[in-house]
Figure 1 (cartoon, one colour):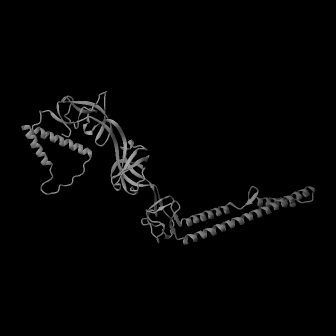
Figure 2 (cartoon, rainbow, N blue to C red):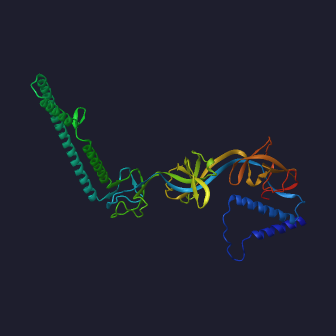
Length: 440
């Protein structure tokens, strides 16, 4: 009866401790604890309660331990990382033309196809430059053609003069041999032939045809290049979308120059393909070894109102980068493709991805707090016939609060075993204890 009375007094005192403040003051809102902290706090509370039980007349002097039945279940190791949502294809549209914007037929949020008009620029200055370039090209081409004709005609005349000089030299040689021509005549004929040959050799001949000097052809080539560039600038006065997508940013207005934006570091337009979204995350160098292309992920965000969408890891950067904030840790950029076409999920927001790194089904699982690490070995403790029995185990897949255990050396585990939930450092094999079922 005395023990029962003490228990009742304790229960009343505990109930009073757990009641809200009766002074009319609002309690301060506490920070939300993680599941690991809750487990740790739960263990502390349990030990405190055990102390109360002993003070209230608990049984014997054996150490009281909280126990729970061994059980099997499924377990997942999950990596949670946050990052921005964006379209799978994104382009920045810029212009180098110092031309006034006359029309802006699109606004943010408009869907466009490749080649659709985004802006129309003033063509006055570009047209003038195009006309000048066209005239320069026409002039250089006309000059080149004239030089070509001059070369052909000049070469033809030089070839004829050479033949005439050669025939004259042959006749003079014949007369000289017969005594009908003097030495002076012979020398004159030779000089005329040499001069004709020299003039003929000055022409640039290709495949038997005389052509203009290479410098004239290069002038045409340069004028043609400049003309083509001005034509492209004229085409650029009509700015079009390079991809199918959605106009997500317009950083200019009618009346401004195309090469100047609200902020010179931003493009005129940003076009993104929002039909398929992706998520960019930075994975710690300590976790990246467990992340693989093809792994599944669950995406959550405030905008989804509790719903989740599926994603798949599609790309892992081959190089890491600084995490920033003074940290020496490195992070690896990783891409998750969002598989579901959710109309609620939009680009530009931050979401959270939970990647399943590892999982196991129908395995022995225990709270992380139940693991005993001693002398580089790992154990779990059970209570058998009022005494502690340490069972050596290996650990497998680990979640936030639970871990898979695999018994060593053929040691078997059974669901009838009473697992010690939070063994303290004083727990030893064969130690007499009092088992208190969890939740009691």
